[in-house]
Figure 1 (spheres, helix red, strand yellow):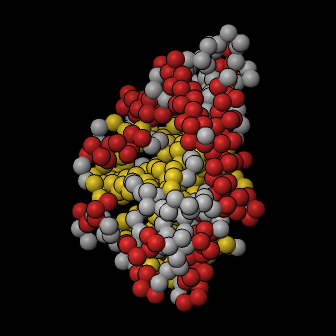
Figure 2: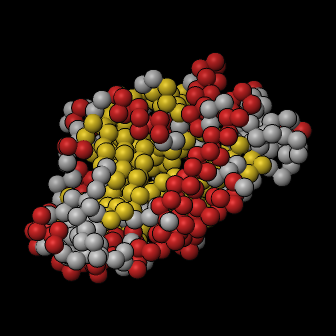
Figure 3: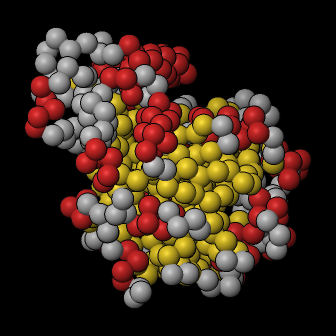
Length: 226
Length: 226
């Protein structure tokens, strides 16, 4: 099998989108990747936080972790990011589906060192919470040594997207069953300050967007439930 | 490498929980698994809906899909389910973490036929939306032929859980940086009826729990934002 065929969509090709913009959209909307790799010919799938910059994913972990040790030697790796947007309940069992966006990315990873290592950590941190990196104690030399940072160049990728309403067989529309979509959203809640935080410590501006997202979602949920 | 060592937690063993109840708790709280398997020695990770019954996961897909064809021949497979509960923002970059529950499950899958196949589909359907299976047009013979259903016996598994507040190095507690947890919740929104639904079609009772969950979440969000 040639390399290209790995990422080719075998089924439902109308759901496939290959362009880089679509790929980056999914990768930037997510923050958790499921990394697939081999250990002694057995497949492992491990969840991990990531950051994206240009055509690469950045990952980190304890230098002693199985994932880091497995990936550091440059083996083929698959990183999959999935965002579920809703359940699609059709009139027939067969036409039930899911609204989602997913990216399946293939490549190889390598360890970063020195300044690149610190930059890689910053990419991951800023991907998760933009603005945080300037507002923490930076890693010490000892902490950096205990951490491995990997850069995975994206060599191939496929993006799949399913959005929209139920698609039933024409004959089934007359059936009496309820059909529709149950939307799903990931909600960040208001940040909870640590119990040992000094009382005067303000919530940083870069975290206020989390509160706003959460408040808007609550309002929208309210509207939907009226 | 012996089989047991695959699921052994290499790092942070205090996060590991091996008992079956803990495993089932994570598997029953989730609904999307990331399946890892090999195609021509390359790792693939594909997201899929699942159901759990006793010590097995049930999966389905188009009979022609790569995942189904790969798994149907009884190769080793890894299924990972991850539930993210929050970001843990520590005073040091190094002690940043994530609250989560994850299950990494190893086993082999086999195709179900006849009554077992239909039962398997029911397990998946009821896992997602309990009560739905009795309220849809069941699969036709032709539809069943186009669908493959797999039963994956859980041979080994590991569960990892991280919950709770920030854990900083003692010396870092005096630093001026904000620290705390940003909780994350998956919210189901009110089901949206299909545009071709007959106006008199009521929302089924088994879907009302989705609305209630959504309404409660909105209330809780409101409280948190006051």
